[in-house]
Length: 170
Image 1 (cartoon, helix red, strand yellow):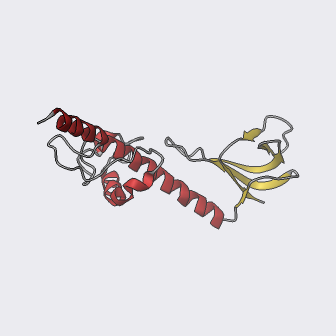
Image 2 (cartoon, helix red, strand yellow):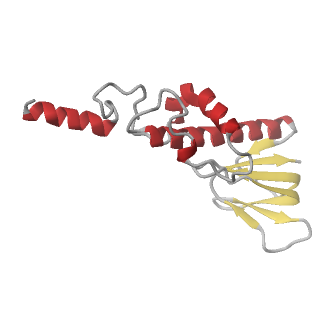
Image 3 (tube, one colour):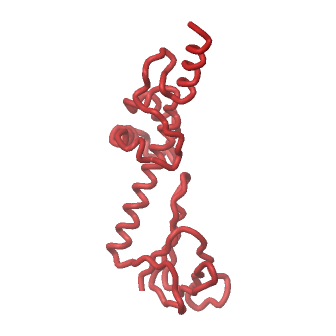
């Protein structure tokens, strides 16, 4: 093996294109942790394994999935599991938002005047959760770059809504 060949083999191993035996890996990481779509094909097997786990676990670690999801084996298996867990949370959030919209919530990007609401939801997805917060019987106030939620009968100690999205039920 020449120096060039060994350098090429080392480069492909680092990118996940080849496993320890030198054979092509079924899944290749595209170096984008926000792109959970790249593991969508493995979601059914991941969810099946997730259902087999002890329901009392507060969090399922990578060890619980290693070797149980066909197609992601190889040097990037932990990355695939991380992306699958993030995709699962993202799908759960999308379902939760769809349910809220079906229950009469509407998305609000700004408000010019204070708005009395029966409920306000503030959420935003990130890899460790969804940040879902919900308040009932509140007022929504405009701000310069954000909105504020004040509980009923309160004048101060509101909640500033920065980033994410806001759903309102009047």
